[in-house]
Length: 274
Ligand code: SIN
Image 1 (cartoon, rainbow, N blue to C red):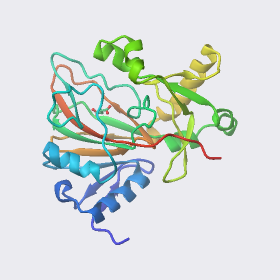
Image 2: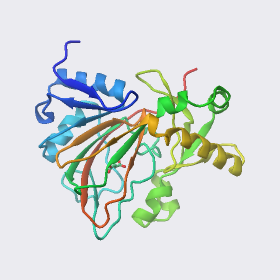
Image 3: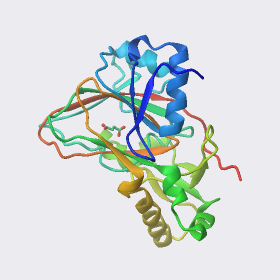
């Protein structure tokens, strides 16, 4: 494929900065190039983008159907845009490693996050390559967890945030079972697919053993060697593959203001293919 965009990796394992592309005039051909870069680097960063909400939505639509997050107010003009805003009244709460909406039956393929207003320092987002996190586990542990199933629960984060009882959330979003190791549907790589924000436990396992195993798995991704870290400016955009990486937004900027808009692309049902 001849390429018109320029891709500069941030680290050997994850993250690349893309230049030579204005997201609001992105063509179908350029979107193909972006997709290829995403599969290789798991998260892409674009600087100095001036995108309206509609342009943000149109760029994300190149990659699939869009989701509406249950925390989005019904009255909102563009319900596909999920506003994540913090300041003196609310401390940043996205500081737990996760991939987006793993409590859905079909969790998100990817997210496109735009910085609207950011503090001068702080509020960076970190990303971890979950295929490398899996590769780095001891072989015996890889074998032990392959085939196990984990339960993901929206209530772990959103019961308090939406001020709802878990049962109420579970009416529409029941706890969901996904493989602990999923096969990436496009790269075919095995990916560690449990996260501290939404995974409640490993199915059919003693609770203490499940907690201890999950902690051990999380540590593999909490290693700076499999991560990259992005410092935002207003107009920066990140596009990440939720099937391949996890992220963590540093909540170190209180009481400064940080406003982000996220558009989330629908994914498919996670599976493991031997
Ligand atoms: C998110 O957790 O999806 C938001 C990440 C961020 O605000 O940097």
